[in-house]
Length: 151
View 1 (cartoon, one colour):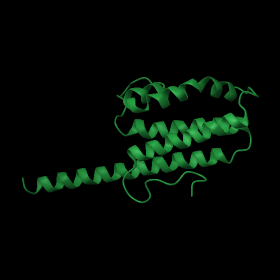
View 2: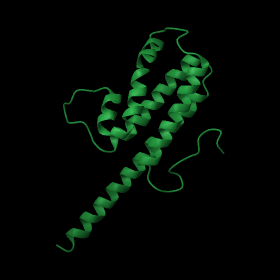
View 3: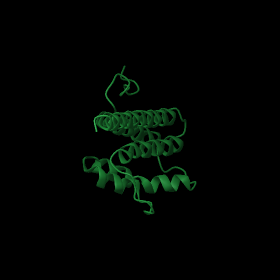
């Protein structure tokens, strides 16, 4: 028994460490997607790329507490986010309300978003990412990177 306990403890610690590294990597990918969105020139491109980055941020939150049951139907990420993390329900509702524009832009519609609307969505998503980073990021100096223009 004394040799089994330390092995199990070591396995749990290694699993937690892998989880922390995975969360940090997912957050870094979300940040990179948001940075790429900021560099796009048209409002429609920026808006769509920011929407995609916001979904990456939501995916980080959704991956932490639960995995979908085998065979479960795909669900809307924003509805699921509101269920899994009620403290983020307002953010989920905000992004859900923007889906119709995203879908129309993907369908080729033009003139639906102004540069200001795209930039506002980008700033809002930076705030959303910072909130999620603070909530789920592993502790340490690389856990959070300052937002664009704040250094």
